[in-house]
Image (tube, rainbow, N blue to C red; front, side, top):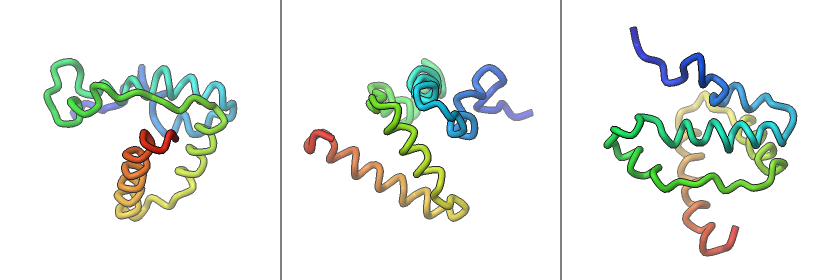
Length: 105
C-alpha cells in the first residue's frame, strides 16, 4: 500500500480543507502554523532532495488574513483541469517572488 502524503493527523494541511475555512483569521492560523510548516518539511530531516534544500529557509510572509483569504479564493477560481494552467501559475508566482524583494511587495 502506498504511503499517503497527508495522513489522518495532517489532513487539515490540505488545500481542500483550508480553502473552505470561512474565517480569515482561522485560515491564516491553519496555513501559517500548520499547512506551511508541513509542506516546508515534506520528506523530513533526512531528505536530501532539491525540494528540501530549496525550502530549508522558506518563510511564510503573508501577514494579513484578508489578503490570504483573497489569494486563496482567486487561486481556487482558476480552472486547474488543464495541467498547463498549473505550470503557468507556478511560473507567474515565481516571477512575482523574484521581484518582491526589490519592489518591497
